[in-house]
Image (cartoon, rainbow, N blue to C red):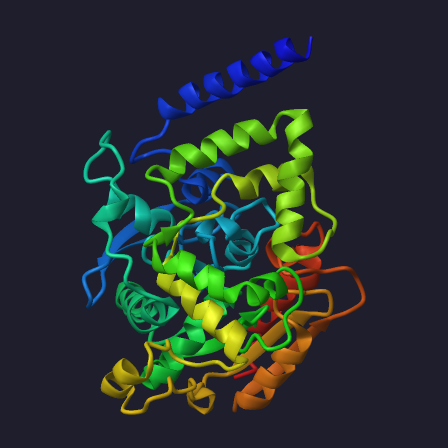
Amino acid sequence: MQSFKLEKCLLTVITLATIVVTTCDYATCLESSRRIKEYGYPLMTYQVWTADKYQLGIERIPYSKLRSNASTGKPVLLLHGLYLSSAIFTINNSSLSFVLSDAGFDVWLFNARGVGLSRKLSIYKKPGSSPKMNSISWDFSFHEMGVYDMTTTIDFILKTTGYSKLDVVGYSLGTTISLACLTDRPEYNSKINKLVLMAPTSRLKSSGMPLNIAKQFSTILKIFLDGINFFPITNDPDTTYQLIRRLCTIKTAFKYCRQFIDFAQGINLPMHNDTVLDIVSEFPQPMSSKTLKHMLQLLTSGRFNHYDYGPSENLLRYRTRTAPDYDLSRVTAPTYVIYSKEDTLVHPVDVNWLITQLPNIKDVHYIDKIPFGHFSFSLSPNMKEVVNMYITNKLLDNNII
């Protein structure tokens, strides 16, 4: 009987895998674009190239489905977190991209190099072709995402819309990218009207689970990451995501999918079942091993520093044998910080340190009355009331500059 059940389970997996392989190509399996259209919002997509020759894909919701005319409002740029893409802002109709669109904003969705639409444009050379992950050079960290990807995206948005400034909202690694950009390219502070940092990730000195595990095994992790270009290791991420989603719809497998998300954020918090399926549809996105090694360096050093290449190469690159800290005093854009007591990945102690380093803090929103973890900023049933309306109101308030 047990043998029969095992065979039946294996047959189900093989069948699902077969279905998935035939459904993913250049034009499909991109969750953010699909959801935007599914929820009835207008979608525009763009391709741009960075100064260091990376292709980026940007998605745009120019106006709300609730508006009778097609006029666009002020541009706002949303930056995703680690292992995520722009899809994290389109999970359901309470997601930040839709809330801001309904409030009258022209919403632009960032996809860092190798992620989401940017990855799709880079690994599929033509419609119907097989993906080629090695067509991307993975020699980059979040630093390059900041000084190249973010700056290129901002310039393109301002040129396209005719505005001289835009609002920026970063989440998790999106805040790290923003800080790297604004410290090493400080001239971009003048192009940002308001900077919102959700679960801001800079120094990782006080992080809890599961980062504590990574810290304990940092030497082994570095050896592993030195041997690969990106992680997770898969030649066809889109097919993998579709297979995982289908597996997670099986009742006996669903609990393990939920446990995976809980482990990733280090805490078990309220989340709708549909949300679990939505997040596994594009998580985890391939991330360069250099980005992961850079994050590991922050974790072990307790600093917010540039990538450490070792004393000899540091001397050539930075004119100092030690990788220098990012100079946060250069982040002069009006800044709003949102963080939570229950976030075990971005500990309140580290956020409080960051707040003391930033010179133009306009407001701080500390969530301590309800259970609210790292993923809650984009997955919680309460995210609209607790986070998204706060952001919307701050961006709409013209008296706060």
